Image 1 (cartoon, rainbow, N blue to C red):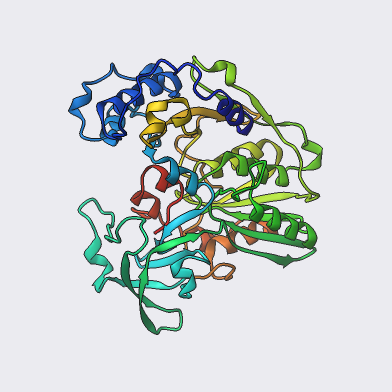
Image 2: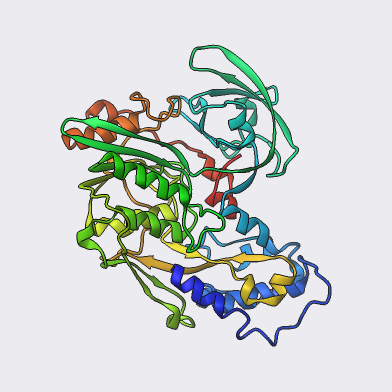
Length: 438
């Protein structure tokens, strides 16, 4: 798909030179809504399912208009944003506190990850801290009638301050006031090598598929550094923890897959993409191009409902070639993808409206393309966010090690499984759902 995106960018403007130019930027105008509909007719994967063009003046916002014309049975993903926000997100430029959270089996709330350079990271916050109050109110006060939670932390804007009271692993409590700011997020949350009998196992916690700004071709320096580390350590098996990874760059997903693939399968099919009937000439296949010398016997992925999009693409693309085990919970279920369409539509570009609808579907070498219900894990194991990365008490990590040592998971682990009624990915939509963070 990266090759397709590069090709498509060379075609910017073709077929759209006859569009009316909006003389004054007005992002919520009917002219913009009209451009959204026309662009969807051309590029939307389900364009044959679009309804007749509605009365544009019936909709107060572009978001409301897009929601009305989406193919609801399958499309949970198409969204609108600004061009700047889209570009920043895919290279990890954020604004916020810089943390995630999740509930344990007893519905206690814990920090799940903290970005190093974010305000929360600079204040020393860590995975495993229990959040007992937000802005002076207990967690239960933020529960909504639908069973979810709305912590009213404000938007992703610098300058917003919130207060959090934590219970630390040693039993003490601390209250921290934290102000949102702009920061550069890290994708690699943790990496280590675990010594098992007769082999070395890498453990890699990867949070989101973000490219490093300025690198060409599009790729991640963090990914490169991690796989150099694992190569130098001589690992023969790898545990990849994607439990909070909502997706991101297809180019980085390809980069990771090319590090993981065995040399014997170099050049074989990674995945194919399919577009709508108007764009079949742009469909192509992507083959593996082995990077590095890593030679892996087995792969274990730790997954959850927060595992989506590019995460699922990596799992699906490697499945025909590896002995793969999934541990945790069902993945999100997104076998389709997007790229931004403002380059093709001058009205959208001039009004700083970035339309990112579903434009393609992918299939692996075995033709598997229909996983809208997600991938089922081989072993259902509950999350334990109360333990820091690499802690042997983390049940999902412990289960992954058991699989690599014994080929299975003991009953105590399996009995730990619970499915949260609400997860952090449920609190976000659109672009933010791909990179969920507070």
